Image (cartoon, rainbow, N blue to C red):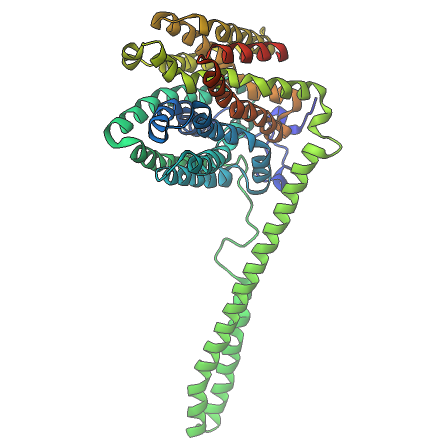
Length: 484
């Protein structure tokens, strides 16, 4: 078990160099902590919610590019997978730049990916613009949102994570409706362009991720620059000499001297300003270099040093489980809209989409499971495992049901059992400690990302071979059960 002073609610900073303060912080479990939860909530809406609604765009891409289902599904799975796979590398960004800057940059990159995808000429273009670019930006904004909630909460951590991750459910419901409306009114290209503008709100969410301890500025905030005084001293000395010369007799020569001195002083001041500017650039570059080196050392030691996360056998087993867990949740979201069409249930699904049922139940499940897991008499691991078993059972039953009412019940079970995602940061922290949460959770979501990356294309290939999605659910369910 990894432990640190942060486990007991001590003050610490987003920047590793400021983790020396050992006094209780007033914002832990209160105050600005709830603004961080709100920020994380909207990040989940904009990132995870929109990704879970990609089934709408997947249908549009099939009609537009006339490619196989397996190939087209790679667009959505790349975006989902890369969002999670880049987790370990985003840990390096967090150690170096902090959560706030990382999330803001991620918002800009994500928005750029959506906008560029609006001009796609083929599926392979979408692999780069949407799968890689938008996916990488999503990963840069997603991991800080999870880590910051863990840093701000001690006693109510499961509830806080549950509330913030309900954004996935709200986002799935809202983004599904929004994308369907935008595609119907403006076409899928304009819909992606508009969604790119909406994604800029990730920058606002990142700005709310304020570090617990404000950074201490090394420079004097009073507006006084100690090096400005020498710039004025030559002028003062010249003025004194000038006064003496004037007293001695003044004349044309003195007048020439009087005319030249302001020009000389101006040149000296300009030269001094250039030197100061160069000095500040060098100082900033030096500080940035030291910070990058320190962040890289912390990141490297967490993965490969003496205290490596991979020396924790329980954590390694948890990583293997995560490799197969996420695909069983992602495949229904990507392929359910087409499964409904195959079962001739499009009319009922248009009234109330099955993915929206999953999303709505998912919202309440995360809060309920978070509250239950926080109860002193209940183990968070027991809640976590029971939810997983329920999800596996639902995946096995899903191919056997061909009516809208039956699918709605199964989707409700999937939505409720998948609420265990709100507990993943909590159980991860239980394994490695809060100090290693960024790196450890980065590995976990990386494993989930590989699962999400391979799951939807695998289901598409199974359909291309058998003309059924049933076998993909059975295979994923068996692998999930085995590693669970």
